[in-house]
Image (cartoon, rainbow, N blue to C red; front, side, top):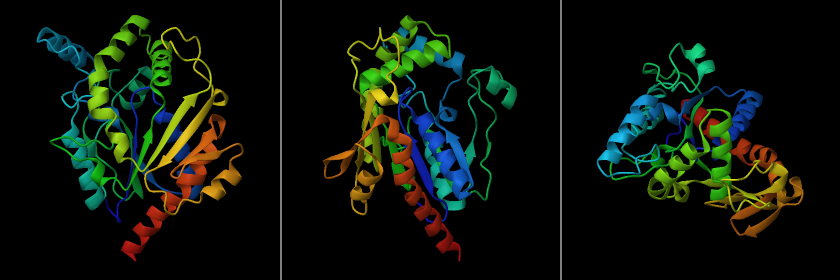
Amino acid sequence: MSAKHPIISVTGSSGAGTTSVKRTFDQIFRREKINAVFIEGDAFHRYNRQEMIDASSDAADAGNFNHSHFGEEANLLEELELLFKTYGEIGTGRSRHYVHDHEEAELYGAPPGTFTDWEDVPYGTDLMIYEGLHGAAITNKVNIARYADLRIGVVPVINLEWIQKIHRDKDERGYSPEAITDVILRRMPDYVKYICPQFTETDINFQRIPTVDTSNPFIARWIPTPDESMVVIRFKNPRGIDFSYLISMIQNSWMSRANSIVIPGGKLDLAMQLILTPMILQLIERKRRTFF
């Protein structure tokens, strides 16, 4: 953790909805005139797209049928930890971009499924925000969670997460339902070992729960809409959280536990604005006090 160079970490698995959370941060940063640098978790995968296919095939030949992006072997977690550490100390570090599609290929000048070159994070930003799979990871080799000043988990119930992934990978990436199902099954051990434990480390969890039938996510024709969902917001430390204010501002919300509030799914952006804006401003104010 660093007063001079704060770090926000948004953690969730593929298909969890971390990208929509990033859009909310964009709005807050633009409104509050905060200069933030965004770090994509995909940039710290160990393999490009073809290399990952080959590595998974080699792992299967060796008897490991669970090689996945969720696991430690397929990622550069030590390099990610080093970025968190150095940014907290001096406000910069090394990162790169993973090129997902042809649109990004034109932007970054590299083929889809590959990485750009490593480069220095711009110096002089107000804070760093990470969005990806391992922003609160703790293993025998790394402790990334300790370097983040605000850790946020995005955790739909598992069937909803699968539905979102199936539809995204099929519609946006052209994967077959069979290939997506294979990925879900292959990565489940790593999900349990590496992804789930991070949500114990997060300061706030946003968990979306559908209010429609998602019992068989593999045949679901539509992703449940926000209005067909509720969101449970859990605070690791509820001290200082004005639950009465939140409930008064968010219609049809209520407290389910002493550290949790339940809101309508369509009010998630509003809730995030109300909860996260003062937390971000506190980080910025603490940063400014260290320099003046």
